[in-house]
Image (cartoon, rainbow, N blue to C red; front, side, top):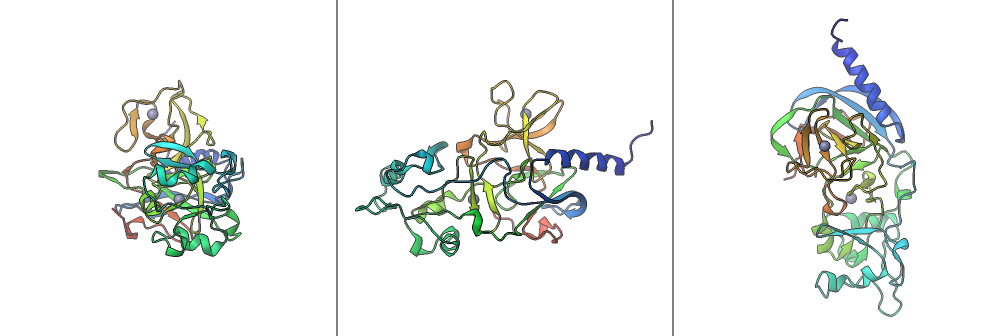
Length: 312
Ligand SMILES: [Zn+2]
Ligand SMILES: [Zn+2]
C-alpha cells in the first residue's frame, strides 16, 4: 500500500479527535482550519466549538452561605499545594489561615457569609482589579449568568511546533478537557487574595467567569479519560500546543518521576505528553513546550495566537 497522503492522515486525525470529544457538548466541528500559532507558525489546526457545560454533572456549589455550613455546601480552595474544603469553618478561619486580620467574609452577628449574588456583582468582583465594594466577599458567578448561546472555540495544531523556550499558559490556557471544558492556566490567586476575596472552585476544580464560562483550575477525579492502548495512563485533555494531557497518576497508581518543568515527558509509545498537575498545584500544565493555538469566544474568529498579547 502507498504511503497515506497528508489529507488521509489529517482526516484520520480528525476522526480520532471527534471520538475523543464524544462526551463534550459539541456545537460544531471538529474541522481542519488554517491557523497562526503563538510563535507565528502558520499551519493546520483542528477547530472545535463547544458549550462550557459538562454533560456528566451539574457544576457547583462554590460559596457556602453560613459559617455553620458543612463541606457539601461549598467547593474547594487551593493553598500551598493543598486542596481545602470551603465550608463555614474555612470561611470563619481565613484571618487565622492567612494571618491577616482584615479577612472578614461573614456577618459576626448572624454568621451569614457575604456572597456575590448577581451577574453585575460577579463581573465587578471577578475583575483582576476587584471593585473595592466587593472586598471581603466570597465570589461566585453562576452558569446561568452566561448567555444561552455562549460557546468556546478551541483551535489547536494538528502537529505540535516545538519552541526553544517554554510558553506560558496564562494567555491561552492549558488546554481543553475531553468533556469540552477549558483546562485553564493558573488562577490569579494573589490578585484574588489581595482584595480579601475567595473565588472557590467546585469539587471538580471548576468555576465560572463571565468570559469563558465554566472552566477548570484543577484536575480532579471528575474527569475520566480513555485508557490508552499502552496502559500508561488515561488521556483527559489536549493541550493548547497539540500535545496530550494525561491523568496526574499513571495507570498503576504511581506518579511519573521524570516530568520536566512543564509537567511533561516522552515515552516510546506516546511520544511527548503532559501529566496534569496535582489538584492543589494551581497548574494543570505548568508551561507549554510548543506553540499555542487559540481559545476563542467568537466561533467565527480566525486563530492568530501571535497577535494576542502574551502576558509574562
Ligand atoms: Zn478561573
Ligand atoms: Zn506519561
